Image (tube, rainbow, N blue to C red; front, side):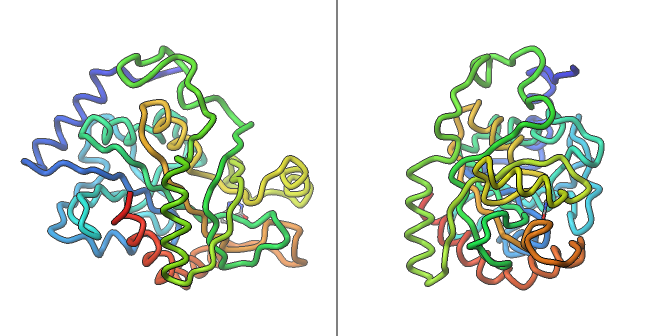
Length: 275
Ligand code: HPA
């Protein structure tokens, strides 16, 4: 298992610092499928493509631009990832979560992560926004596999509260103040790129999942390992496979993301002010 060294993370952080001058991000925002538009609202943006950062992999997923946007959003210093990396693109879990550690070195203390997912909970509807309370990851190795990089955290990190309880309270209040209905639940990681089968979705439901998706969990584990606060939102772009008698499509996911973008964006911005 190939892991990165502390020196590599440091080299990437140094390269970003050279471009950013005095600016330091407080919050790393990772935007999922169909939700990247928020990055366009960043004020005084400094745009840095992933392939300009030493050691960082690039984004190949549709609708993922593959760039950082550094600047001000909702009165906070942010680093927005417009498009994330996924293991289904062929990257390792360490590759996918690489930018989280780099941003930690730049001073980010909070990860706000969003994704598109399929709703497993049959009380949910397509278009619902879910506050992530916890996750499950039974597939593939850990993003922390390989030699532990002690500078970031311990070998066996606690995962009792990956999604910071105080930030969940912030999210509930923000949703209430905006009159945005907010579901809550457990996000279960599946590797993709194929959507799940109906049998897998039934199994996920039995295990306690409320939504299934192909991202977020590696970044959240790495953020928790290095002591960052984490706030996660899922946009349920569709009912997961087998819930409805219809096939799933990537186009549907992106269209649902775009339709929900105004609500989602308002919620994220309201949270940014308080985290
Ligand atoms: N499954 C996995 N990932 C997804 C889904 C889904 O149903 N919808 C959007 N991303």
